Image (tube, rainbow over all chains, first blue to last red; front, side, top):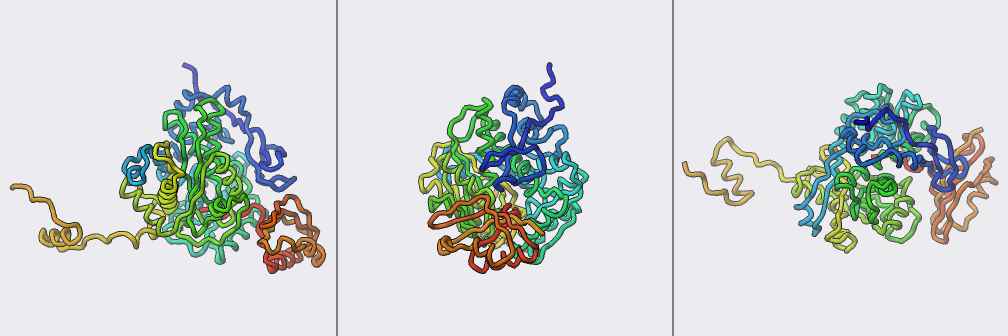
Length: 426
Length: 80
């Protein structure tokens, strides 16, 4: 039997400006020198097509690196901590609650650091190492920091992670355990942003979402690939995705389109809809105005992992919505909590606030008729709830506190839950 | 000398104001527009600024005082 997965090199060939089309050699760079537009990785698709097949993918590892042919780094040298190929589960209970007959949850809580960020950082850290950087850096409010610290540990690189000084303890521990240099910045969100932008210019570090951003962003495509493979090599009819910078949203669509271009699935016009929290919803707000111009906002929401007020890929997210006949919606913080609880109570999945945004956003889109009852719908749940416990803690019932006696238990149970079943005959 | 790349975002009331011309005239800064999208309701301009570091900072503070939002061209880089 032929070896289906020989040591391979990447099919990435150049960086190309998304605005003016100028092309550059593969390098740690994210901005077009000509028009300052964002750069994107460009591949030799003809070469990929001659090698890739469903069988080749299926024989790969049970991680995102089974799609190594479509990523911008040699899979044999990847920094892989076991990311991806997370469960796609049918969600009949939640579907009934929302009025959807064919609803699936892509549960990306089950990544090594419990969020989809492992996908992008796995690619970014692999590329950073191939460019011989010794330090991996980022600015983050939680999930990205956790993932950068973990991947740097695995890659034997130094990590320098910048966080706002008022970050919750749980998120700090989730990074600190990997022993990065953790820098808590005293200042506003804008101050952190400006500082890291300047540091990215000054030091020879791989800032995952600055100078290696074109590569980093490609990791999100694997969510699109996986969903198609897990649906039995077909694309969803409708994807519901949380939006922060808008990058994840556009890359899932790119992943699905690439699968169709390469003949791995039939193209069937997947629709892309995005959800944001109302307290930071610049993309949904522009969609509501039917404008392609984003108005930056000052974030004020419990969905902190989505709190990007001036989204780098906002315009491209709006374009994706337009091209795919999708929509955007925004939900209140109360709806975020309701969404978290609804997903947990119907399907046994505890999502972070971004997941609550997706579920409540989906509910809104169904009610307004944007999502149809018989569409194959995939809701992307991108991070685990244990990271943002404080968001729901106040909305949950406290435990029944009782004396260690049957009488005390029965009294407390009946007070809250109503009558107990008949006791078993002894 | 320093070179800085920034994005100015204008609200509707400021679109007709020659903010970039004034920036180049009142501060010792060379402005070089690379990309822009301006409508009657909203506008953004991506430009490169050349000058002494302190002069650029003073100039950008003045631009902010006019009500124009100033961002690094990579836009928000703090992620969740």
